[in-house]
Length: 138
Image (cartoon, rainbow, N blue to C red; front, side, top):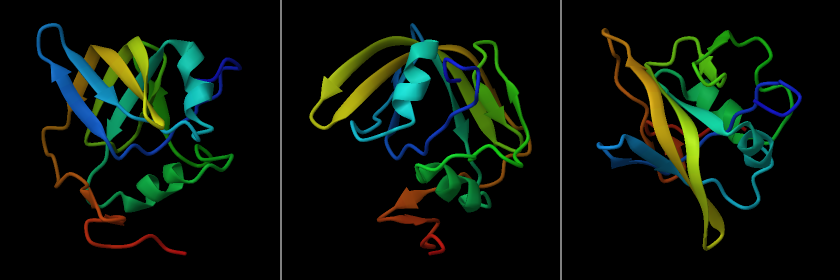
C-alpha cells in the first residue's frame, strides 16, 4: 500500500525463498521501478502467486501505469498488503532489510502469513520475456 492508502503493485521476475527458520523470502525490484518506492514506506508487501491462466495480470502489473487495480478484486492480508482474488497462493511479509545490489534492490521479507489454494492449477512461468511461452499483447 502507498502512504496514501492506495494499493500498488508490480510484476517481479526474480523471487526466492531465503530461509525456512526464520521464514524469509526475497525479491529484486529495479532501481527504475516507480512502484517499489510507493510500497517500501508501508514496511510490508504481499507476493501474489499467479496461475498459468493469469498472464493478463502479470502484464498489467509489469507496466508502470496508473489504475492497475481498477476492476480487480482484492482484499488485504495481516500486514495490510493487497491479496489479489484468484491468486493461486500468496505470501504476506514485513520488510526485514533492503540492500542495494547492482542496479536492483534486494528486498528481504519476513513471512507473516501464507496460503496456497488446494485446487492449484499450473503456476505461471516467466522465461525469455514470455509467460508460459506467450509474449504479451502489444
